[in-house]
Image 1 (cartoon, one colour):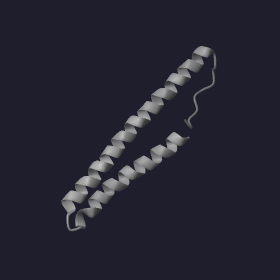
Image 2 (cartoon, one colour):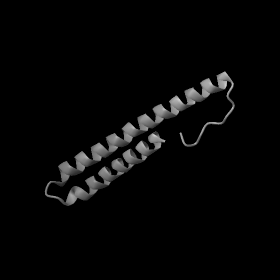
Image 3 (cartoon, helix red, strand yellow):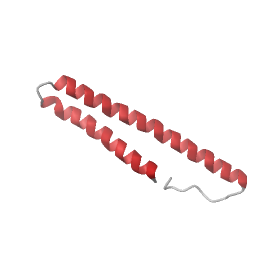
Length: 79
């Protein structure tokens, strides 16, 4: 559950910073502010992608261990 909230916040931040970079082109120094906001947004998005893959693999490993112990419940969609 915390993972889903964290994912929502980071993707929103990434999108907001990327949009902010585009919007900040109208300030006195558009090149610098746009590049900083765009790179931070892209970096946040890539970082969150890596964290999401990590937690999905962790969930898969735990599910596989539960199957080996004899549990037959399906994995939760809520993560």
